[in-house]
Amino acid sequence: MIEAGRVLAAAAPVGLAPTRFAESIRRTREMVSSLLWGAASFALLLLCWQIVSGTVGGDLPTPLSTFRTLAEMLADPFNPDRNSLGIGIQLWESLQRVAIGFGLGTLIAIPLGVLMGSSEIANRLLNPISQILRPVSPLVWFPLALVAFKAVGGTATATFFTILITSLWPTVISTAFGVSSLPTDYRTVARVFQFSRDRYLLKILIPHSLPHILTGLRVSMGIAWLVIVATEMLSGGTGIGFFAWDSYNAGSYDKMVAAVVMIGVVGLLLDRCFDFALQRLKRG
Picture 1 (spheres, rainbow, N blue to C red):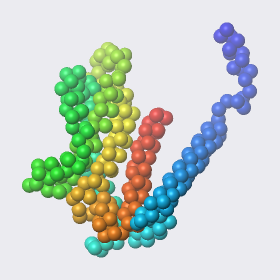
Picture 2: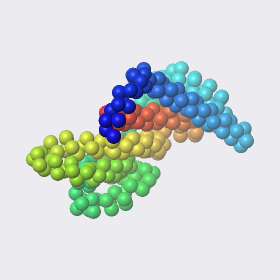
Picture 3: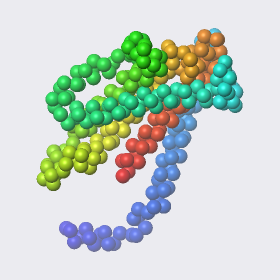
Picture 4: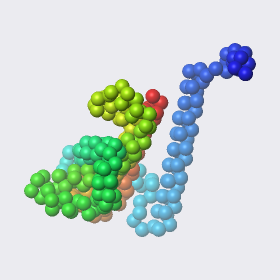
């Protein structure tokens, strides 16, 4: 049986073997297919938007009027006038807040997830706390944080804390799951070769859990971007959330919907960054 298999393998045409050219053709087809499906999805969204705006009437802007307004906003995105800050500055302010809150949350979430995943005692002790705090809305956390941090940074600190406390839980849960799913054989090998704790963590535990950690971070970033819009609507000042709310109060509905479009686009780009990192990791 083995000999017959060798004969068949030797007789197989060389042209059937996978080549780099064939692989590049496959990836190109996948990319084109993804772009076409994305375009179809976007067209369906625009069609539904047009139907809704035409049906309900009122002040809801149409896609065409919204994109005209968006084009005007993007013509001068970094306008420094405090009375009409450019959309680019507003987005930059929001992204900075998200980066700080999400970064601090990540520094807490990953070690906490590793602890919960590697220790049954820690998991039983901390998991109920995470399940209680995880569903609490940012609209509740923000005023609570304003009270708690009134003397330490005020609104800015409250914003960072709200992003942190609402976005870290997906990373905690996903990291804990990744760590707890480490095969027993890996632990046995580490004991046989007498790995130090640091070497075991860096060479075995983290590499195995990394896909789960990235998945958790991807979800956490989506939550962080969602939360920043809500907190900026409450806090005022600057940011894309404040811009959308201020446009609504001023009756500039075209600008409000254009801000919604920008929020969605930036959120998509952030998600694609994490998806790209995850796909690269899977490919090795």
